[in-house]
Image 1 (cartoon, helix red, strand yellow):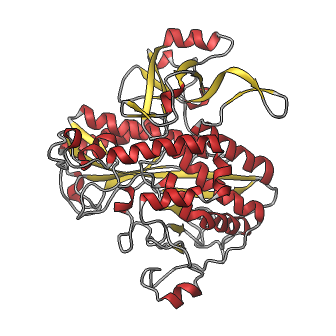
Image 2 (cartoon, rainbow, N blue to C red):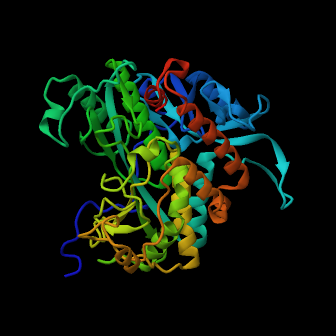
Image 3 (cartoon, one colour):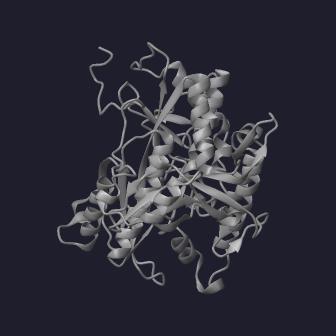
Length: 477
């Protein structure tokens, strides 16, 4: 009887895959330029364009890569964050498993990479290395590989992309239309936004990313694109590629796509909910109709560090204008609940072994996805490693945590709150030595320097620099 109601598509780390072009097949796809892409600490997507003829020469060299100023991770608009200097270079090395075609720009393909030191150095273990401690993508790769090697644990991650299509005029912040959640009026045949969304959907699939669904959302001009699960590094890469598809196809039709957390104060905001499933590599381990001990310890570790993770998952002041109690945005109490969207962590498909997963609702598109996933998975891994017991009780209703009395919250083990401001989130993180160890002190220092500069730049007074706060936010994200 336990699996009769099992539902949805089953995904496993050993079976998920995506269709990626090989280096040899790029010319067959008429690729003429490679977009050498990276994402900095402010979550700005950057790239260098390289003709494929020169890219092939790079690959034939002894150590393929391009030089990037060490300041490339610390730029905020055109200024350098504190601690970044206009000297020194990293080697940005392509990860050839990350190729994706760019359907929005014929003849182009994108590749991600890893930052390395140009000059080898001797480590504390008396070995030679070129590894840097500050590469966001490399940090996520390290966290995932250690979990598999040390604990026999793997993860799958899928994302929901929420965004708003605006008329491409910052002055008015005007949406393409106003309609109700998932209403047919949001995708009327022949409408500009319908054509744009159709091209986005086709481009996502053409680039080898599984499209599961798209639909109109609840805010004016708001849509959601949901993509299928992949291993964490591949999922973060796919998220960045999907955003580039959305940005560029919208622009090609005279529109502006924005992933800003909250554009209209009277309507829902935009999040980047991540769905994470936990898998064991140990022989004989199977999922049943209830959470396994592995899933429980992962959840226990994650909730223990939840108030401190917001510094990387909700990283700007505007992030806190989206979240709150009664907004379907995860609420402000540290808790989890079966199919409860008023918890920061929703347990989805709780009794279905094939599709059970955790939805992380405390995440938006201003976050660097590599750092956000490294923090989320790293916190869960701490719980698995320590076999931390799950003391929080399932908030499955009928009351949300905010509606409960103090006594009722105590019965559920709910004693902590999520940070309510950007400043509080930054303070919380700095007090969490275990989270800081996941990232390393050098990366933490550099990230928080950039994060401070971004927050201050976005919080400038009205009309300073010719743009309002909302105009700066929409322009940035």
